[in-house]
Image 1: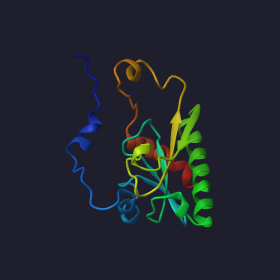
Image 2: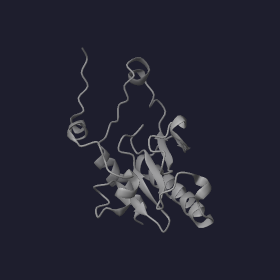
Image 3: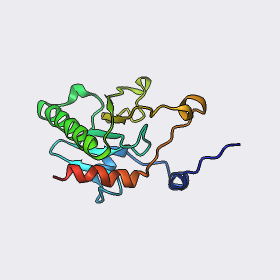
Length: 160
């Protein structure tokens, strides 16, 4: 049997995975942005890292208000969120130098939303060759850097 070492996963394995309330609202109200992986806050939205990323640097833009549809966003919230998308893209380009990005929303459980009651926009950095034999043959995704290290790299470019 082949083994792949990922010692940082023990934190997830031993953690209490049941959270009361909305994950995003809880993070937004928390007193520690770093602990909850919030990278940046604006008037109407915030940028947060995905705790279970598709790729290193996978971030999300989340409205401050708890809403389940983009149709409920006001004009200022819409502008703010798209401004945050661009701010996130710029920071990821500088921090991680990806070759491209996947950008999107999963609206509703049947559309793949893991959190379907609080909308959010995914930004996933992509590199040439990031889908390789591990994901193709073994159905395993390798994330090559800890989320804490990636957080620090990205945050540096959002603070300015």
